[in-house]
Length: 327
Image: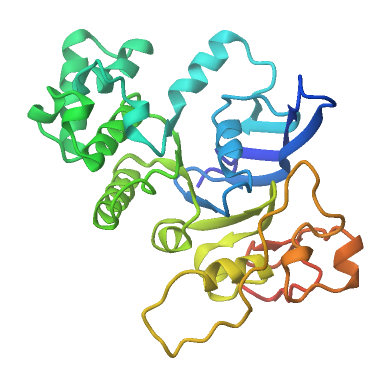
């Protein structure tokens, strides 16, 4: 594996000003000092409730919005201040897959044209080569020539998402940011799309940041998982280790919220209290303390620093029990 991560977020922060025209404006910090690396060829799952900042983080990683502060590095190079040519080159190498395929596909275009559009936009191949590439992509995602000749409204939700995936991988990107790509689909179709994404990742060596609120999805897909709460990553590490031995109370609560068929299984923690606070006015100290079942006085006043163990797992919690001998 390359020693230089494909993507590095270095204290990445994004603010939005809200309330303009309705009195005093206020600052909403959607992503707050997020730091992590994504190595080439791995799948990083990003999980958390709605409002935790996952989608904003995804837009930052795709360079669709600029960070307020911090740095986004791609193969070690800072993307801040890149010129138009540099942005255009980065766009080919970093592609999105969105939650709603119907909104990401042009309803006027036939599917084959949508899949071909990135090839035209980046000037990849001759006309004949682009036609061959589109046919290969349709086959790769489990669609046929008939589907390529259809318009989006003529396809099912799963077929539309397959077409969107084909368009995303058409220019042979290195990085794919998938933002809730299966949450709008039926459970059976979700499994099919997840299997497809895993297969394409192996076949093309893709690096994927997979954003979801569903921990059971990342359990079977991701190499590592990052848990976000109110704009910050509270726990990140190898998926199996984080899910088997969660150290942040929020991670434990997310795991306990996943339905299980075994009625004998008892939850270790009480259900989460209340809703996620507003990022406009976050709580002092640890941001999770108003909902945390084990919060102490230190949590209400002191923001916990992220600590790492030997396995590469990092946790921001005063009461985390990290094993420095973990492998």
